[in-house]
Structure formats: structure tokens, C-alpha cells
Amino acid sequence: MMPYTGQDFARSFRTVRKNTIQVANDIPADQWSFRAAPGTRSIGETFAHIAALTHAPRQMHFVERRMSYAPTDFGPYFAAAGAYEQTLTTREAILKALETNGEQFARDLEAERDEELAKVVQFGAPIQPSSKTRFEMLLGVKEHEMHHRGQLMLLQRMVGVVPHLTREREARMQHQSAPAAR
Image 1 (spheres, rainbow, N blue to C red):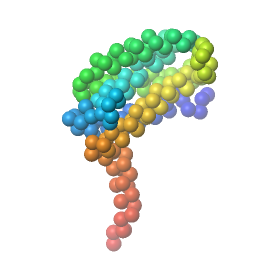
Image 2 (image 1 turned 120 degrees about the vertical axis):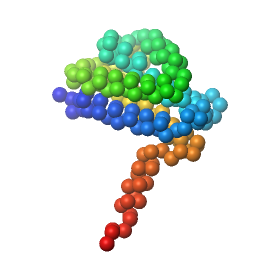
Image 3 (image 1 turned 60 degrees about the vertical axis):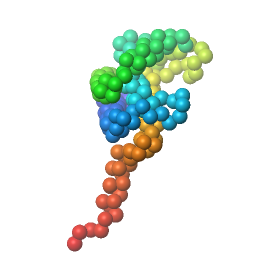
Image 4 (image 1 turned 180 degrees about the vertical axis):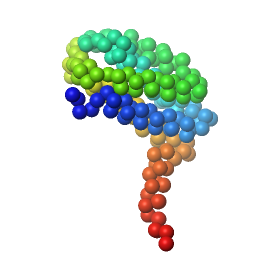
């Protein structure tokens, strides 16, 4: 048995997605077109990208369950995910997709057996390493989301919003340093 099960993975993914959705809700709608610099994604485009992150991995790992990929095999999966991402053009659609797609991915993780997560998927040259467990590949989805959420938390600061995790930490610290009531 794996020490970190599909149920554990689903729980941690739900936490990551819950925090992403909180960040999305904290940024005012009129700030979603903000870009940190030319050539970068806007806040809204970054949320749409996150909402579409699970599209390709779901197809690859939960629908097709392929065990090997040539380098050129990834293109159609990511093209389909990119096309889906482009359909997410309103704040409402993006928020709904964050919730719906996140929960579907979490349910898929939750239902995944340890034996499936431990299976080794092979890659053709020049991809290195030449193999990874299905678990490691799926973990990349959560890591990718956390990467972009870190960007979004900086963008929050740039548009004048203090991230919720910072607000919560500051409130805890203030509570802990408050003198005891007499």
C-alpha cells in the first residue's frame, strides 16, 4: 500500500483548489484584466488556465490510462486543454470551471487504487526521466496549480488585495500576542 493514498491526494488537492477559488473570489472583477507586464497572462487568463489544468491529465490517466507516450503524443492532449481554456472567457464561467473541474479531478483521485497510482508510465526519447509513476505525473497537476496560485497571490498584492492566507496568519499572530483577559 502506498503511504499517500488517492484519498489523501484528493483531500490535499481539494485544499489547494479551495484556496485558489478563495483567491479568485477575493480579487474584484474589475481587476481580472490586470497584467503584471506585457506578454503575461492577465489575472482572469491565469484563473482560466488553472481551471483547464486537469483536462489533459484526466484524459491521459483516468480515461485512456495509457502506459507509454512518445514525445509527440502530448500535443493533442494539451491542444484540447488549450482549446477548452479559451472557452473560459467570463469570471462566472471560470469560477464554475474551477469548482466543477477541481471536484471532478479530486473524485478521480479519491477513486484511484494504490496499484494504479504506483504504475510506471514510460516516455520516448528525449524525455527525461524516461519513466514516472502515475502518482508523480498526477502530482504535477497540483504543483502546477500551486505555481500559478503563487503568481496570483503576488498579483493580488499588486492590485491592492492582501491574500487570504496572509490575513488569516496575521489574525492568528495578533490573537496569540494579545494580552490575556483578566
